Length: 351
Image (cartoon, rainbow, N blue to C red; front, side, top):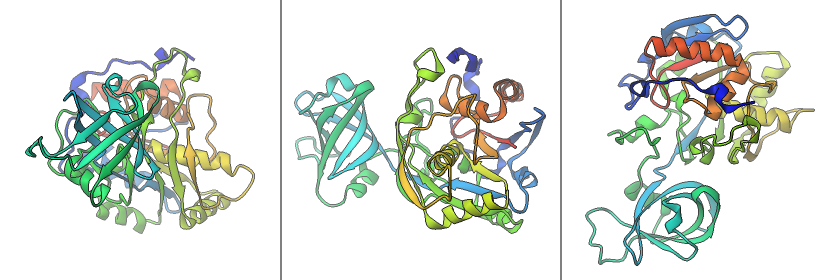
């Protein structure tokens, strides 16, 4: 399958740069995956499309200020590290820019802008190993607590097309974010408020929380010509006892499982493969599942998602659920109606 099949013209001005003040004031495009019928609503109308007995699955990962800017010791070269995966003992897998300047043994110093550069840096990273496409393994040194230094020195890892950090960091967190570890937000969940989730729950919809820490897969473009040749980067997931029991219950009574975001969808389908012949159990692990047209969903019945960029693995996943032509047709209509795209954009509900 050629990657160009997922290409379309997206006006740059439709890529949302800032979050809306009111989370639920975004717009909602609905797509019936059986008929291709499209509807246009406000996000607050999502509840009309949810039914008593539905199970709404949300990713409760929490974004860390994973983008660090420092200077290479000895040369003063500016270096950016994006934290991707903790490896234990203060070692992390990171994405380095520019990676060609960081060979094993290189040291990067991180300090606040107003700090005297002659003073020792409070946070340093030593490169231990090189990987492909700018990936490095580094070991951090510091006094005190690592995450406190991240809060002081790090920035939220917004996509590169967003030019400014939001004044309130929580605008790049879901209201139910709990387990820190992500390098990006599960952005479909940014539309919800605590009050709206209570309204949904009061309708008889069960809320279930699972965790997938978003990593390099979100930032890695599809650079191959054939979709089948792309390889996803593994991301950590965890499903607790309560979530496992709720999913088993939904399957037993043939209830509808609604995934909030592509990260929840990939986690659910990873579980479907892991426990294909039996009961879903509490578990954790790493998922590198790549979903594209031709894939048969086993747990996900409906999906709430944002609008994605051309040729991305995300639009391929959405196309696997609703059909490529139906999705691209919906995208054409969204562009004509000036929907906001990507992380801070509007929402799409496929049912």
